[in-house]
Image (cartoon, rainbow, N blue to C red; front, side, top):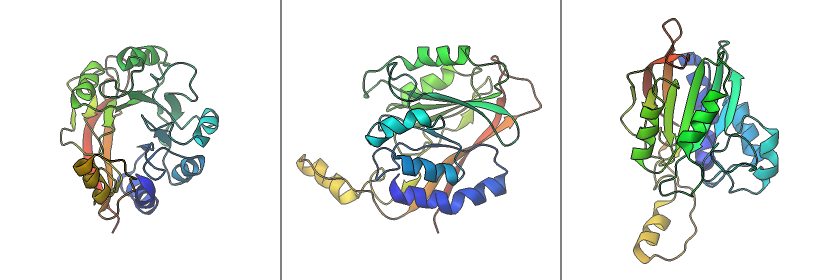
Length: 258
């Protein structure tokens, strides 16, 4: 979320990766440019900081310059269930530091968000086309309602290694591993300033609620946090129904900039 979010990634991510022996870092970057969208420069900045895949959401298209850039950077995703023909892709397949082949799938919900293609049927299509050697599959479910995100978690239990919800900027306390081995959390939270209203300056937001007039929103300051989840997989045990790695655990992580 804005420059404060990028700053804490620069300052804390490398140490976190080293201390926890993390093999793969995935971040949702759709609010990284002053709270709205992402730019080519910021994509390069995040990748240079150790983020290996960047997912998006309903703000993916907010910066015009990203439209031409996105098709040339496969690690920058946008929701896969946007209509065919839009720039970029909703899935990336790569190899983690430990040699495990992985896929990241980016979806967007339809409740209280633009009417796009069905994320449930789209994820079925993407999973069906993955090669069997892709051992780890994480789905970023970018959605407004808790019900739609939780439904996706249950829908993919036993098909994906993890389903992580994004969009509301407020971390939920329901992280757990579903019965068939899929790690789930309704919302991972926000990496950025928590001294405002979902990352924006609280004065302007409160004014908007009071008078209903148009106002300019600026990124907040203060209480800068890195919100994340750490997912550990069962590399030695049996695979899930789809032949992917099962999750052993999912743990919420919250770091502050100081």
